[in-house]
Length: 215
Ligand code: E4P
Image 1 (cartoon, rainbow, N blue to C red):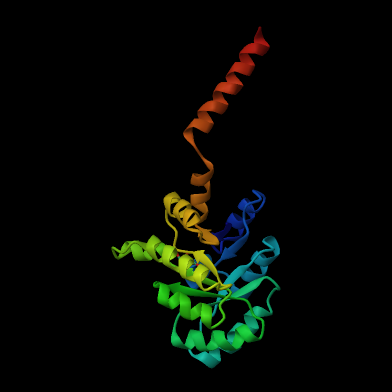
Image 2: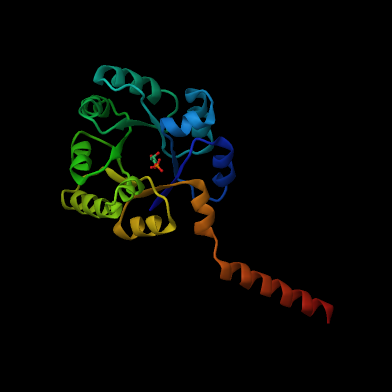
């Protein structure tokens, strides 16, 4: 199971890079806009810090414009994955650029049917959004379960990237269900790494050690 960071904040990415657990990064237009930086520059910077897949999303919505933009983005770094929205134009663009060998991540997936269409059109990754489905009262995890099972049945090579993750439980359930990747908001990584009994246990070990030194 791969772990990606869901952020365009370079200092945060650098902060976690040396934990040895960051396999890639996902960005989206909202995350990049929040940083107030040049899109291309930031994606190139992230690609230098993290050697794994770094998703960068097209802003065009028409097939031909998406293709042109995707070809440009794909040249920014060898580890760039072009993110395309799950729309009919997105599929048409995907069908063309996938055949050119451009790695892709089809985003804004909210149903197993959308994931299957994206996989058939040649997506390298599909990103079902868990949290946003939970937000509208649907169990986001159900579509992860369905997509993983359908992709296994039909031996699709497309990987399932669990996105829009909000809680540690989302991460664990995605792992249990067999998602290939979970993209995680950075603050969740701290929560995943921490346990009160770890802190308590360490404090007790060190206190016992200190006591023994004083004897
Ligand atoms: C994934 O690639 C998206 O950037 C992200 O997971 C969206 O998450 P959100 O629903 O918390 O905005």
